[in-house]
Length: 312
Image (cartoon, rainbow, N blue to C red; front, side, top):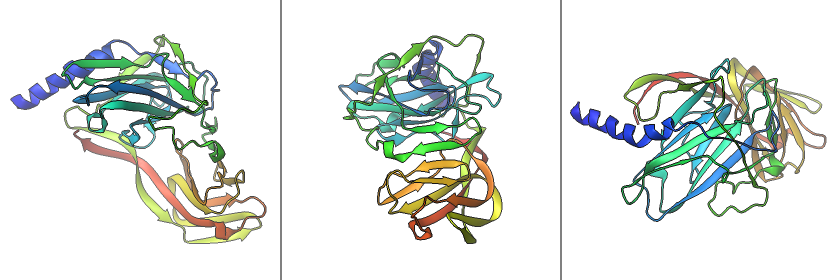
């Protein structure tokens, strides 16, 4: 018990000061109320840091990466409470992902319905103990970069994805694409409370998250012109994941509210990322000139609340 108390005290001294310095908000100046945004910043150390934590506040949903690894605990991480009255802060232990020299912290941000405009999309603190046993803490500031990936979350709770604009190198340290822009900065958000969520370093506790709980295969399908309907054995809330082969770049596919523009890669997948919908079938509208043989696989991914006990 004494050892556990000492461990919690150590984490409090390395992480809590960073949370207490206030939220330093950034946003993409080119984004509208529906735009998903990619953010990134490279931090450099002479030696590999001994400890590292990322504390993040967000007015939407997000995925957070460090050095290309997804460190978000679960899918569709919430940044705001369901009614949008409070901003949630969550902290991740990222020490095992750190390395000497360059460390890239990156966030994929999405607004949430009804997609209100905001100049405060993301506030993040990267803190810990460096290779010389010295504490460090860095906040989001004007040195961060951002870009639009060509994806959007619509006010009706659906998504649009233009895969021709996808940049698979955006997480790499040497990324130097001219598409990256400087961010806009903002101070604390007046009149809005902050809710500190269960952190990854807290004592064991029950914590409800969203997780994939089941993957369904379709039972049969019907073809009606350019529309193919794949039927599942039961209704579920979640995603439809389509795997294509040999689609032309720019070809548009629609499935249950998702609008996807193909990249033209040999094999590619279309799937929601930040929204879900109830469904018992996948209604796929294919562009003229395509056939059902180009749909290699259709999966139903059920997303559900998952209460679990977490110790990290």
